Amino acid sequence: MDLHERRVIGALLLLLGVSLFTIGLYSGQLEAITDLLKKAFRPLGF
Image (cartoon, rainbow, N blue to C red; front, side, top):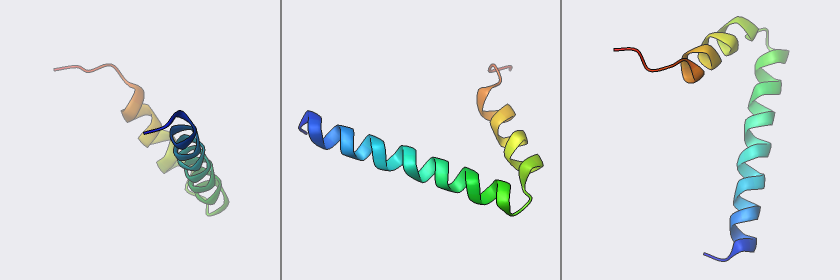
């Protein structure tokens, strides 16, 4: 895969993430979004 193609795909994924985050904020799902972010970025505890 060419570097240009990777940049385009990365930009599209970033735009998708920001769009979904904005939709979640707009629809009042801020608590659910913060819970998901906490779960995604917490250290792995077994």
